[in-house]
Length: 186
Image (cartoon, rainbow, N blue to C red; front, top):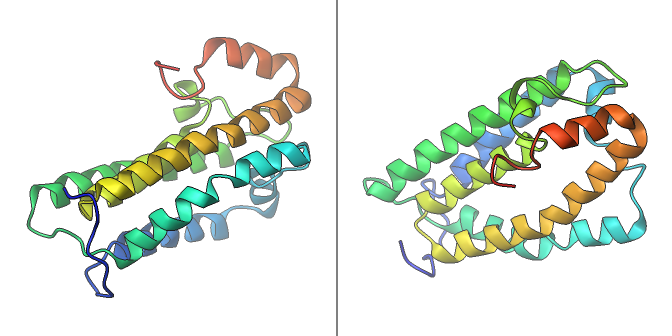
């Protein structure tokens, strides 16, 4: 691992993982019913302040994505193997979380599958997949900017939880009492 990655355009850069991730994500969304996709992206209950705070993560995620796209993968190094395994675990978890969300009946909060251990499994597994790419390119700076973006994503999560409380009421309140926001730590 190094702080500053060497930036260059190559077919062996971190963008390969991004194409895989967004290819799987796009295929899943394409296969989902339109009402599920609409629920997934519903921000109607957010205030302007919540939207602005959520957008702060772009200041960190855009440089992270640029490093991922322009940094060569450390193929053959241990960090590549660890990063690839971490990415694969995150991608698998993200797909499972999306499928769990899809299978939730309209008018009810998602509480089954990975949602039994985290109220935000999509966010956690997206972070895990992204973290895997940062490891595979061997950049501490990418890890740091990703971590800062994730801290800013907390505002997005708070806004989503507020919307869920307004929409689902006591059933979501009971869910909040029994399932941690991220995992058993938080």
